Image 1 (cartoon, rainbow, N blue to C red):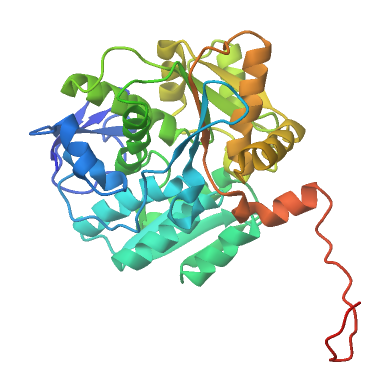
Image 2 (image 1 turned 120 degrees about the vertical axis):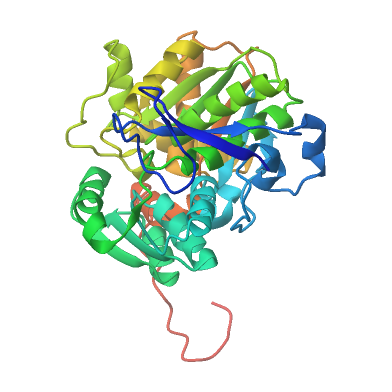
Length: 396
């Protein structure tokens, strides 16, 4: 495992000592990156590691993991789209890619002796935090919009987390955490408000490279709410180049968003360096309902540096893509993940991507966590009428 050298602010470059837990930069309140003194990090040793994200232990903090088996999800070649691969993050613990970031963040919180953690979440991050806090023996305080998918509610309550349901969006949940955390003694583990969720998510970048023979694709389409995975993968690519594991080539990084909440797309199309708060955010893809990502500057920088773009798709387009993946690929995707396929179709149609381009589409979670949302959309929420058989088993 790697020794942490320091924390570095993504915005002002301020360096902070690594001795204890950190939230954001003490100088400008920007997000922090973890910097390492890499030693003996060899690409050839990765294959001997476990079938989890901890196979990349040489580029992760030197700490005892709190693990539920997260990471090393399959990269599936599409049966229908040539040169397209589906990175199926729905096979992670708690059914989404959030297991990577929260597993790493909770691991570090335990190592620092933290006893209480708070998080605002659109659903899947809350489920992951609740599970990993159980494994770590830490108290979880969760703030979620009251209309999150039922699976997220049941998971968090089942894991014994202390849950507050909020009549609002994730931004309202974040405000409540910010207002109460000091008095309650909570460590704030919100998106990019601490540096280690990025470290867990960066393993997606290492995996894509390894699973493609240590080469990067021409493009990655990533469903973007808070954007931690996008930032993590970009950090991973830089680390791998520094270590000599890959060359200078980078994929076009593409953000897929819902048309009902598309702050990245709006800022990108207007050539802005920051994002505005999206008003009246609405989409059935709960994880994409983030009115303004905290890492807005960093996301836009990556899109520009990689020659990427941002694409908005409607809920109808998302659900069409969901059906396509289910019927053609055998992948029962989360609506957020299906947005990546819908975005791919648009980018093929307008010529931004070619059939010859190798493209990785991220399915960020399992559709099984959205059964109520999917059933309601397709009008199949009503249960079939029961038949009264009088207790006798017989043909009917």
